[in-house]
Length: 308
Image 1 (cartoon, one colour):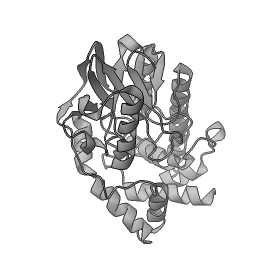
Image 2 (image 1 turned 180 degrees about the vertical axis):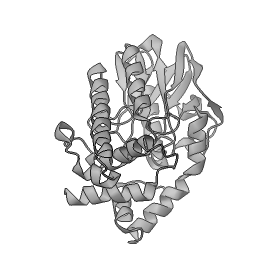
Image 3 (image 1 turned 45 degrees about the horizontal axis):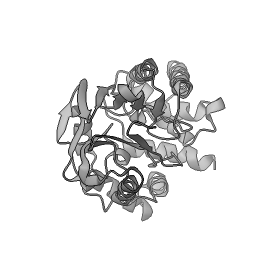
Image 4 (image 1 turned 120 degrees about the horizontal axis):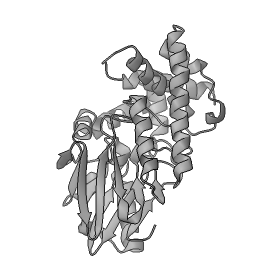
């Protein structure tokens, strides 16, 4: 992307295959997100040294755009760096540490946890959660924060709750670049763990307003404003379809199976509709109950295996 900025892109963009970014100038460097396990993160850091000339020891700051492990599980490989995240993300990381994922994957692989466990073990088979050493954020913020990386002023803009409780986008105005974390899934289905949908749509509107020449999504290929609008359109679509069924008296599981995805059916991981409908349900019913992750993996599994 030039100007001392690079994007690390993982080609599949599906479950666990996230993107990251590097900001470097004047001998200083910051990393935007780590990857889903330490081996993947180590490969990325070695490649950055070989191709960008940036050694991991010179990376003084890691920004975690949100709490999910595919953006945080490599933090321990930057033991000397400050780890920056929103306060809401830090709380979420403590509530769902790598050990929990390792336990769920092992149980699923052993035939436990039913169809949810089978699905969990299958989609996360390439990743080594058991080898992840948890490293929590060392600096948190709410709202807006800033970094200086050499001559680059960097804005950290909290836009969650949306995908998760504390989503952050990373804007480098001087390089006309934005790293969006999982506010953007390109060619893949967004998953609304937290909501509300309106916050996520507002975050997409904000990204469009930044007039960035380079937009790095959390998953999938580099995109532009048209790609941002595609995500916005999906969110409007899924909310409208879910609300229509909510008002008709359907339950969230029935509604998720009833919605015809149309042009979105070909997006990766379309079964995430089960989570998205449930989140809309909880909002519209006024429920403050947290998402039941195991139950939702079970609903996704049912759709996934029924459509294979």
